Length: 167
Image (cartoon, rainbow, N blue to C red; front, side):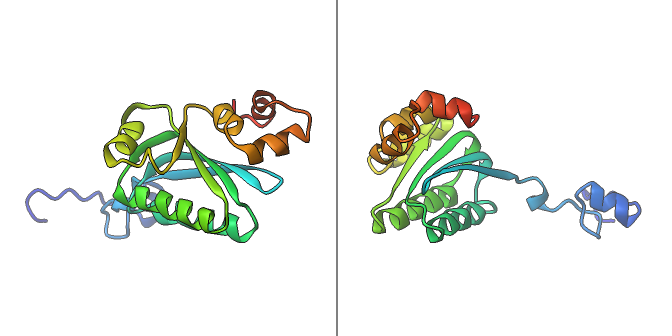
């Protein structure tokens, strides 16, 4: 075995459970995780994003948005408060999603709790392109399409978020 390498050996089923490839090494993608959840209401969506949005996971986010648009969704709120890391590929996926939605007269609002993720949008100047909010109810309150949909149910933004586990 070459100097500096550390292979873990064992039966293939144990290696698979541990996230190792057949050669015993951990693959980089075994460490990268993105969780996408969503809540739908009359053609508008809240997409919960957790984990890392990077070169490995950005395509998954991009495909989710494309699928939502193809299914008729025009207004999306992406809740990024659970995002730990965002690289240029992730930013590109978000910008591409915004462009796709705008081409159909839709919108993409982002929710971030601040910190490093907000700092990335400030440094890159993307605060001019995206509507950024600190909570899902704030994003809903700022969007006329959401206001109409939720008002039709007799709920306030806060009540709707609470009912849907988004508060």
